[in-house]
Length: 221
Image 1 (cartoon, rainbow, N blue to C red):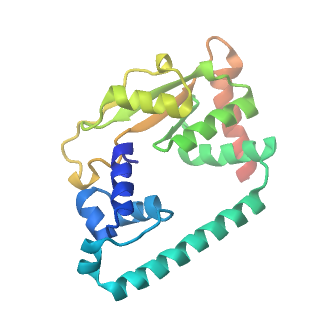
Image 2: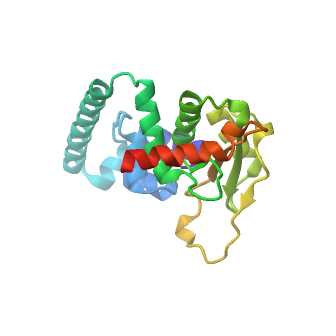
């Protein structure tokens, strides 16, 4: 995940007619990320791109780009047709699948960890639909990195999840010195650790954690 201004800079350069290779030199992201951001952006090569790449390669690239756009649109339409409207049971089962991969299995703490706001937002929906957990019962602690701005990160996650900033614990910053430099900037908003708080109601405490694990066991048996 990257800062919004980084993505916007990439979009602006693409609209100005620059190639992916040019944009990557000015925007520190992978080519796959760039492709994901820009696949729907209309591309008309500018003079710099034409001189650098050549007309033949540009024509080939534009054709491949158009084929990709059409394939993505087809996939989106087919996915919408296949998925349809999610039932409460669909939400329950998908939430269990997410918890299997991203949820806490120990310490009797009901917690989901992820760097993608979409996963955390769905988890909020899942907790509500499946167990009656209200948003006031959810707490988030961010795990950040030295290049992260805690205030901006809390605002980002609060805006994304609609969980008030008052329900955020103090963040933890990973200051290990042996991390690869190539990982710098890949998680500018860190990772959200979202937990359910019981506030004295036993069904949202240890029992909720046990219930979720029991449901998972039933699914996997």
